[in-house]
Length: 318
Ligand code: KIV
Image 1 (cartoon, rainbow, N blue to C red):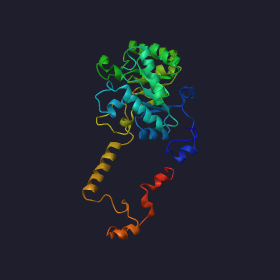
Image 2 (tube, protein in one colour):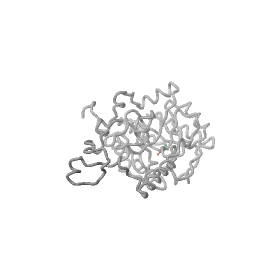
Image 3 (cartoon, rainbow, N blue to C red):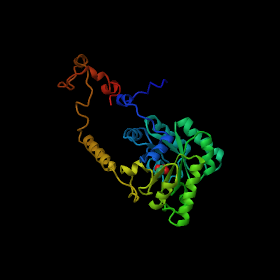
Image 4 (tube, rainbow, N blue to C red):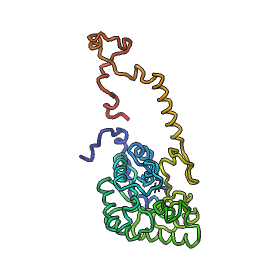
């Protein structure tokens, strides 16, 4: 495929206004300029398009998909194949944001070589532009960077350490633990990581680490002092089915909106109010006459009824 041809469904407006691609070095430049970095998770084509077109800088295909998309109790069971499948869908949607794939539990814990091979799969088979790893895995971070794979670290409350932590607990709440977190963050940065997610840590600790680190911090439950912020898409739009954590801000109630749309649809079907005549195809007049059909005599017969969706033909007019 040439770089000027895109698969069907590409919007003309997207093609007409090329945007500067966000890269890992661009995130560091944003930190240098004091420009906040916006980040969100997404797990499929449609949500990734919305996130990208809204101008979010970093899009994480998080292993949180295990919970919010697949309905698991925690993130531990999601597999490499599932993460690859969702990363591919996101990749197809995104033009501008940096696409980061979360390495799932077990895909990098047994050995550096296995972690490296799995990270290469995200880049080669799914189009990821960086991978995220949880914990201070300095040697792995160095090996990934040596293999040309940009790395996002993830420190503090690392959900893959659920059992070791004994629950989802705020981390680095003592001076000693805060110092250790800073040491780990600096070691990851020196190993070549391009950014670090800080999750579930006191804002004072995140602020100090952010000030000392040469690379951007992206906070979730880490207060306003980080270089950027990330939320889980489903939390932000209220598509989850549990009370949110303290750090979540709901920007809309998509759950309520979608639920009411579905209820309206069901009611329309049940009272035969959907579909209407306008939402139906009609026979061409000659065929109707030949059939002696009594169907829709009042309908405006339209040659366009030979095509399922006229608008879709007009360059997927969006
Ligand atoms: O998987 C995920 O969604 C994450 C974010 C919470 C940072 O790791």
